Every structure is written in C-alpha cells, then in structure tokens.
Image (cartoon, rainbow, N blue to C red; front, side):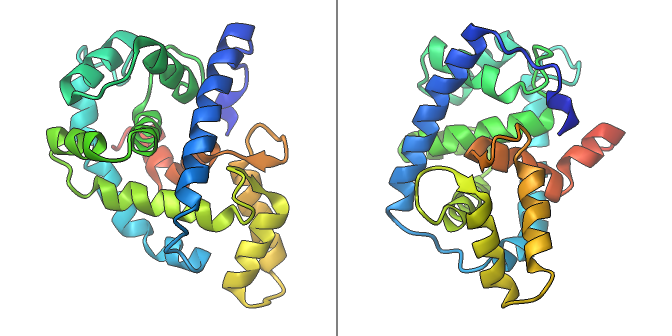
Length: 226
C-alpha cells in the first residue's frame, strides 16, 4: 500500500499503535480458541461479492458521520460517531483507533479506513455492545461480514499467535489449491499485498486493509465512484 509511505513514526504514534495492537492480538487469540468456520481460502473468495455489498452499505453511515462533507472523518467527527453509536470506548482508545486506521496520517479517515475501524470495533467489543452499534447504524448484516473476516484470519493464523507468517499463508493456499504448481506464487503474492510494513508477519489490521482492496473498495474510492 503506497499510501503508508511517509507515515508518522513518532514515539507517541508508535506507542499508541503498540497498545492497540496488543489488544487486537489478544482478542484474536481468544477468538482463535473457538476455531474457524473457514476451511479453505476459496471459501473466502466466494464470499467477496456479499462482503463487498455489505461493506458498501456502510457508505451511508460514513457520510452521516462526515459532518462537514469533505470525504473524510476527522478526529472530532469520530468521537461524535462513537457517541451516536453508543459504543463505550475511552478517549484514549478512540485516539488509538484513529491513529491505527489513519494509515496515511492525513488526520482523517477515508471510507476504506472507516470500514477497517468498524471491524476492529467489532473484534474488540464483541457481544451485545457491538450488536447494539450495528442496530444503531441499521446494518444487521455487518456481523456476517466482520465475522467472516475474523474467521478468515483465524484460518490463516495456523499457530494462533495473532499474526500470519509467510509459511502460514503458503500452507493455507496449499490447502486450497490441492498441490497446484502455482499455489506458492499465489500465496506469496497475497502475502506481499498484506504485509505492507514488510516485517515478515501480517497483523489483523494489515489483513483488513488488504481485504478492502481485494473486494474493490479502495480502487473505487480512488476513482471517486463510491
């Protein structure tokens, strides 16, 4: 993802992201204990159209919370958003989420970044509160979409440590491709699309940003068609 080039690497930003990342990793490890309903990567691919459709339904909610209509949700608007959805996050937690999802550090979240944020909220606030937020947005199918994404990550994360490695990606694609000669190349291509910080492992947040591209959210956003 080219948009992360030049991101703020100040100690404050890194500390905030590290704290949030630890919470995400722990939440993902807890979810992994339940196992995954995904049995192959092809299962996820087949759900792309439905996931894409459900994600795009969030556009109305995004526009509602983009109070000045400039195409991004800034920090103040995000706090209003959490208040309207009655999601119980502290100011520090909201700050950390904003830092994590504003990947190009332009002090505002575009639509694809907002989608990632909603999924992280779903993961961190799984249960009645997450369901209530979906009800407030009048988007009852979000749980299907976000649960599919969580299950897909759990399927890829073979050792259940909260991250996906290259070897785990190759194993997952091999299971899907049944030994096809091109499976290794496909796995590496998918992994490189996810691992935008090039540290050799993929976090759930990185996976989510890659997923928005796979279903076409980012491309249409850039063209101004969404």
